[in-house]
Length: 196
Image (cartoon, rainbow, N blue to C red):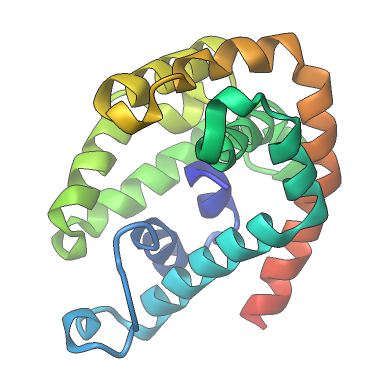
C-alpha cells in the first residue's frame, strides 16, 4: 500500500502516522541504538508499516492484481498496485472514513509537520514534496496519478516505463477497483488485529 493507505491504517493515532511514514526510511531492528530516539508508539507505527507491506505482498488478491498488471512494469508491479490502491481509497474515501478526505489529509500534513525534528533528511524531502504538491488529495484523480507516475519515472531511472501506469489504470479501472474492494477490508481487519 502507498502513503494514503498507510496513514489511513494509523486509525487517527498521530504516533502511528509518523511511524507509518518512517517505515520506508528506518531499516533493521528497532532496538538498534540508531533507532533509540523513536518512542514506543512511533516504533509501533514502523512495525505496522512493515506488517501492511508483508500482508499486502502475501495476500492472494494482491498477488492476483500484480499478475494482472502488464509485464512491462516488471518487478515494480507492486509499486504500481500500491499506487492504484491509494487512488481507489482516495476516490472512495467516504466509503471508508467518516471524515472528508481534505480534512483527513490536512490532519496528516499537520502531524508530519509537527514531527519534522525526528524525521531523517530523505523523509523530510518526501514530506515537503508531498505537502507542496498535495499528493494525498490528488491521488483521487487520474490526472494526479499520471503526474505521480511521470514524476517517479523522471526521478528514478530504474522505474522507466512506470509513466504508462496511469493510462493502464484509466483503461482498466473497473478491473483494478475490484481487486481493491476485495482486498482492502482484509487489510483493515489485519491491521486492527495487529494493533490489539
